Length: 244
Image (cartoon, rainbow, N blue to C red; front, side):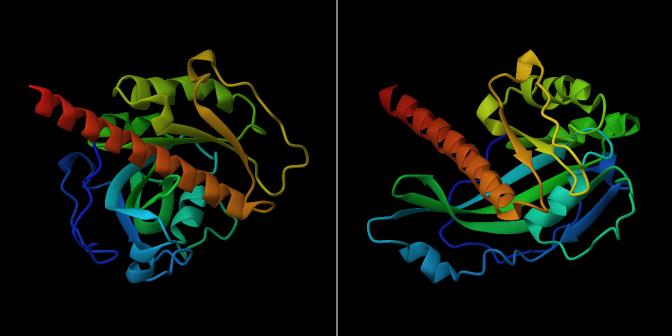
């Protein structure tokens, strides 16, 4: 369930890797895209600002979950800078799409930065694929739940996604974030109240038409929490070993 430790040298971007899970072999469509937002060189990342400590390269598997037609694929394409678009028509995801990209210069804490290889799993919201959920859950580091608050009853599904993919897997609330995603055409911005079980989970109002970079910043902040959680766990384990 943990991210990989910092490597001595980052792996090449977008390395080719075949699917290893038989449960989703017929469902998975891989889409590897370059991250245009993070074009800084690795040398610049390592030097950083004066006094900044570079923690290394991490790898995180993030699930993108939520009801059907909530905007999961739109969000996933934006975060990964995928070039494909749906042309405005709704095309439901069949099983899962996996997008791989890098996020560089993430501020983990004051004076500490890291790079991260992100494996973003854009999962179908259709429960007919529930037989594949166990494969989706394996080695997950974080969960991004997307729903459309302007569409009736989508908020009622949030507890199911949270319980199944966060609580039951032993993930912390800091390893989960909710995007209340508004479509650009929405006349009014509806704000719904999250179920009580998600009271400690960060919920962000998102709109790619009005504040696209704010959405990206929130995702980077979420990655920082995911990495910080892993490093804290690693430090505790090392301290426990030293004290035995």
